[in-house]
Image 1 (cartoon, rainbow, N blue to C red):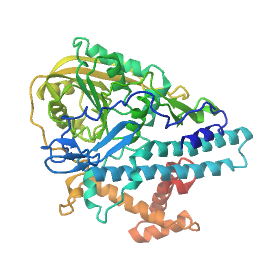
Image 2: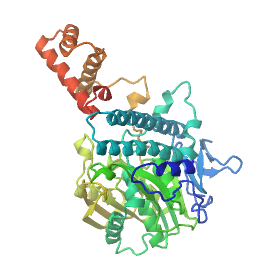
Image 3: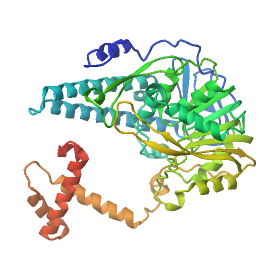
Image 4: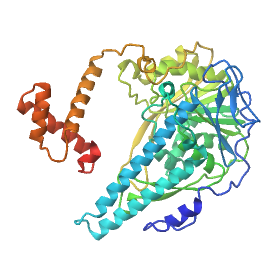
Length: 500
């Protein structure tokens, strides 16, 4: 696979011809010691049993409920799937993986059509050709990165009802945080250093904050825990994230591999910036054997209680699909008494429930109410996901704090992402006004779009809909026109079919 990818790179106009391979052999000793997680893992399903490695088949299993957790192997690093519903979660990622492949196929077809546009200049055709070839290679790159996870090796069961319990948030896709990979391992634009400096400020009074065992929840592409581990006398680093692509890349680069990956900047500076081949690599190889990766849910951390000296949450607490009030006790149970919680990121809560959209003052109050003593808090404006090949630049006013655990608190059962009436088909569906309005809008849109046959005009579709709903002709034509405009705008291409 590496040879094929390398040979393709040289065909893209303007791309580097330097040899890179995503499956180059690891240069250092395995970054992950198989025994390093011993005694740390707890079952996220029953929450009472400990999880241990079976030397017979290489899987992890709960000693109480016997639930097995698969372990993906890649270049000496291990990625255990420690979710409450590991099979359901892997199948969900399989679906998202195939969703990525489908979206990529649609994008390739759109680019081929664009290249055939007779009004396109020679320069424009060269740009589109480069972008088309880069998108094709990007598909191969992602497939190669995920190949060790064997997502296609698991099949859907006859009854998929129970799989809803392992459903991931919609925002968690393979490409959702792709730019984090480039920021962490390629751009070298000072963002990683700025984050590390901000954390250093709030932990200045705790010189040994990172000397013991450190757990990073929502680690993403893992540059922050890598920097913490590298610059401190950290005895053990454990990183947890939902996204297998991010952890796959991190596990490879930390061991000294270089991974080529195409970036597609949101606002390209010039023709060559529409597709940029990046080489993702770490400044130095970690070979201590004490840096461990875990695929898991930060809302239900699969760890024995009070086993970590420090917990770090970078860019996490405002994006979790849960009330922060319920999440803080989960962090409390991960850290030992006297241990430290270090946070850095925004407070741009997205919840519809205004009661969950906390101010920084409320966040600090919640910490104190849930067993933490505030040591330091700070605001710092930092650059955020600023690609060197994009005209778009963003800054975040980041909120950081360091808090010491002073007492235990009661922890509520883990909250599923989906509501109870979805997980249990015997429960009534709530008659929320907003849900009813949205449902009726979706039904109207579905009927309008179903009436499109390539021959009917807006007026003819309007007459069909007016008879179904008993609406006036003008009102119906206006509604039909609005729906079709929305579909056309969603396509982003002027091609209505893309927005349907």
